Image (tube, rainbow, N blue to C red):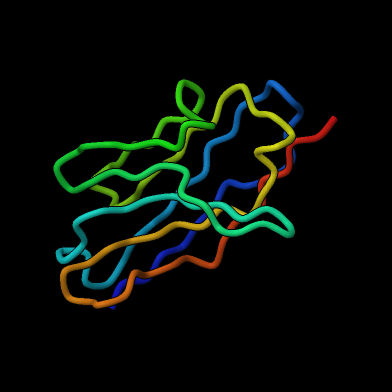
Amino acid sequence: QVQLVESGGGLVQPGGSLRVSCAASGSIFSIYAMGWYRQAPGKQRELVAVITSGGSTNYADSVKGRFTISRDNAKNTVYLQMNSLKPEDTAVYYCNAEAATSKYPYWGQGTQVTVSS
């Protein structure tokens, strides 16, 4: 089992920055990729960014150049640094982990990010 706890969401003005964190615990040795997804009201959940255990990253086109995903292995934590935020970035952001020991991915409880003036 893997437990994921997000933190760092909040309200920010357009053009501002915010960093959200995801702390993993449990069977973390089995995790081979972690990512961030988001879901806006009335929309489907979508991939924002992913980072593999080898450090490879991938981003949605809508956030390339503005968001950066990183990981601190010593803290078992993945971060999403969000810059130049836009109102359309408003959503609940969910942390996700893919583990070799589970058929299904693990999810955190989500953290709200609101971009508004």
